[in-house]
Length: 259
Length: 259
Image 1 (cartoon, one colour):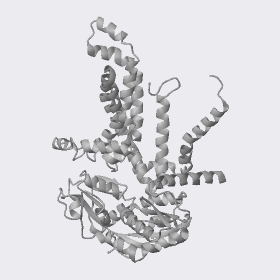
Image 2 (image 1 turned 45 degrees about the vertical axis):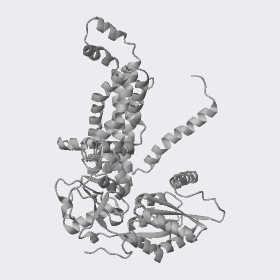
Image 3 (image 1 turned 90 degrees about the horizontal axis):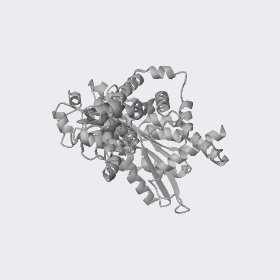
Image 4 (image 1 turned 135 degrees about the vertical axis):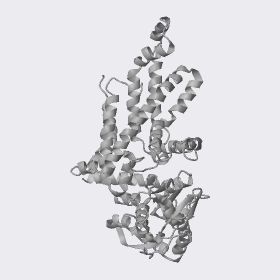
């Protein structure tokens, strides 16, 4: 049993190391540098990259290594033994999934709502959520199994509109790709995704606040630098972190869905 | 066979374990009691049925187009043959996502032929046709290489005799050459079918993912992994069994898989 566990941990570490290889510099460049591994949801990639740079500038002895992926993938990696110090999830369910590895209680730090993404110029003339159900419109959404798809289902039910997508994808990034390439006439993504995609424009719709995705963050026991991890979490929750998130289009952490 | 050195056997055992361990890992996570009900779920059955249908259609495309292409390549000599061969076989080693992007920019709505096809009333984007195209693109090299190699191994004597007896070119092809390379064609078809069944990246990039239309078994596995890893494992095991079965047919001892 012991050998098997060691093999599994070794493999997971190797996978983690491979994935992180491209992100940070050598962890041993100075003996006094502490490296923390921050696992964050893909939708946070732009804002967390800039936050990590600012944190490193203020704390020269800390090296923040970032790993971005879908929250479910990150949670699975943490549960398989990845050496993460901080986990920032795009939904509460995936934070619950790693509950046994948490160091402290997760705190909500941002929220996000859905918006309509169309190719630049809006060739199909999309006007609002109801127009997404028009026959012949190539609509791409997230599958109900993933967080953005679950939010889509909630909005559909609240507004009483049944969508017939041509494709249900596993991530917001895939939906954005289908829209920006012009393959799809419209897609449903998060408000904050519009700014990070090229060839795409956002069309806000009434009723988007029926589904609010809330983002929790927590330090983890799986990491090696829990003090620094807690300090980074505090930085994200503090005024500088909150201002950057607001600027990137994220909603307040305590946002609640309207009925 | 001469006796092998002991160190070689030791390395071979490690290599075999490397090949087998992931399959054992997959099987170890399966919930065997629940397996039948997981495979009987509508989404799993729909995905498997779609996979079998599209892989069959793709194999037919590979037979109809790949055999003439194999003949054409085999008839060339020198640098032209080497260059054409390298280009035509590239999909074997291309990252599937690159194949998918290429197909998108060729047959997608904004692709080179997309508008023409749309105007002709042949929509490709987000249809089952797109799945078959993606599979045929990545599987065709197996047919071409099988036919070409089989033809290269023939000395042309029987064809010459048939010609002296007054047979037309098409008659020689149908009555002499094709029966002569029948085994190679069958092998190419089996491998093309297997490759089509396993296609994932190009399909996701090019065709999208919608139950019953474009969501083949590998795409269903990718989606189920988010919400129901057990179901993903169950469907994965079916593909493992199919893959091993197909390769067992194609690569019986004493027979070259790719001649």
